[in-house]
Amino acid sequence: DGGITQSPKYLFRKEGQNVTLSCEQNLNHDAMYWYRQDPGQGLRLIYYSQIVNDFQKGDIAEGYSVSREKKESFPLTVTSAQKNPTAFYLCASSKGGSIRYEQFFGPGTRLTVL
Amino acid sequence: AQTVTQSQPEMSVQEAETVTLSCTYDTSESDYYLFWYKQPPSRQMILVIRQEAYKQQNATENRFSVNFQKAAKSFSLKISDSQLGDAAMYFCAYSGYGGSQGNLIFGKGTKLSVKP
Image 1: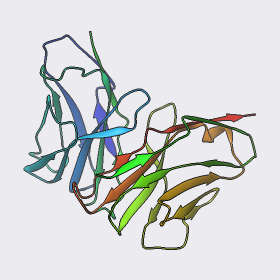
Image 2: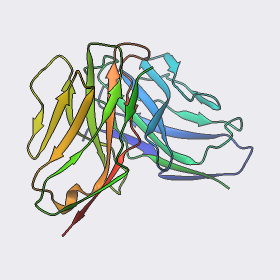
Image 3: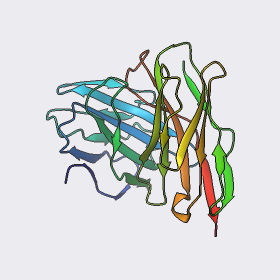
């Protein structure tokens, strides 16, 4: 079945540690996105990539980094520079970067900083 | 910058009744898309319905329909014959050509409860 997978489902991190969240898709989509969701808030864009080896900062990129070495993979690293990383993280993909293409979402990763 | 506002943090509806969720947005663009996403307790985001701004006809998907008022920048979601499985967070979202093209701008959501 085609879809988006995110791992792990739950992740715990100690302060000062970097952690990497995985996002993989087998939909052959060109564009991929990372969103952050906080309680009582909508989703906010962290980074996006419209093509392999290229990515752009979203609205809240500080303290995060990404890579896009393969079409199907778009990992997100939460660095120690991120002041308040505890949140729910959602990865999405779409056929292309145009607004006409629907974004499909993964099941999410819940990150908790201890 | 574009913004999306959902003024109803929580709504409640009786099973089999109809409920309308409100959404307003602000943009200077003339062509864009609007979306309603559903997020059940599993937290999986599911697209419910979408509307292209240039299409005057309101979108409909089974029990879900929208009332798109472009001049008023209003985009409400009507759920008819509400079912227990409709209980979820509902997010209104905008996507336009300006800025980060293709990216979604979300409202803060409306939590819908369905009473049996």
